[in-house]
Image (tube, rainbow, N blue to C red; front, side):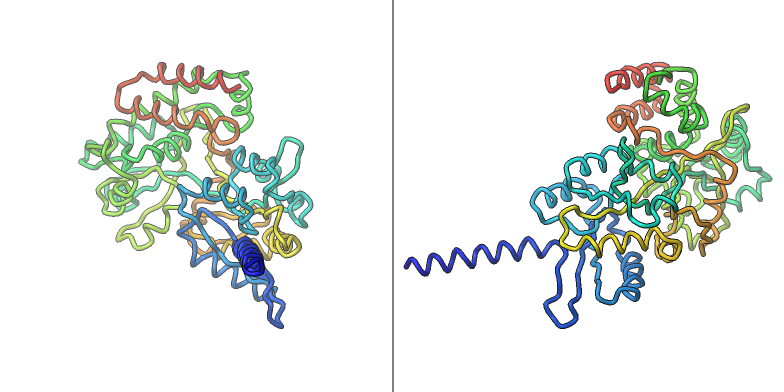
Length: 416
């Protein structure tokens, strides 16, 4: 009986060990000596693209297989933390920028990527910053960014003799002209809430308050979130409210895409990740940067979206580092740019020509303009929810721009 109990106990321990290794890197027991790594991600839509990228890497490293295992996006943070806490985390990991990524590095889950070959030399300081600790250590290799701009229906613009606006004032005149001609100027709604903040408001905010240099002043308290610039940005949302679709309160993000795609709306302030939705559109469309008020420089929200790190407890750190070094090289970044979903842009220093014309049009908007991340990401993520509600309340007329700005400064002061 004792032998039976001992045997059962040994088997249980063996099965537990197998369960742990099953969710992380493992070495094939066959003659090939193949190493199998797992990659965790929130990009569940990118399975085909990432499998294509990883297949290219396997040609270089035949004995290393990387399995892409994404998680449903809303569940990613919680799922990853549970995996890491339980010792079953993936070997390679998509890393959130700024505070969420820093937290996992401090907890000892993300490895130090500072000395991975190519990382220091091949990325600008601004592109490394989202995945950098205060002491300069990097906890991930920058992978892809997304951009914000106005999609517009070229067919309608040409038919009506309309020009791309160069100032915010001209943009409002354009909206008024489209409305007078019977068009819905903007496809954006507020039913799902996030896009009106992330894409529209944070996409145009640098035009009213300035870029990265000014952002850090708001973060430190040297500038206040209820100053003239911030209040003007909220006023801008109040001014465009009448140009949103009828019943915008119930218009979802997918509804907005459909309104633009079916030519029921002439413009859509959106992110680059949506470009593929319109690849088969039966009309000509293009992009322009949301313009700044007269006398101010137009800036672009070019948001650092994805980086990849490796698990500090992986059994195969050398193989993980080799893959990340490849991503940090011109050859790896070029291969990745071809595999990335449309609208996700490599962040490496080397000039890379993309195959899609609209993707290149997005990147061309950056030329000669300063860029910055979405305002709340670096230091003010706790402002996300209250700022989201403030934008919606201003659009609905339930709050004045000044009241919204005052509320934001009160909330920001508590975080400084």
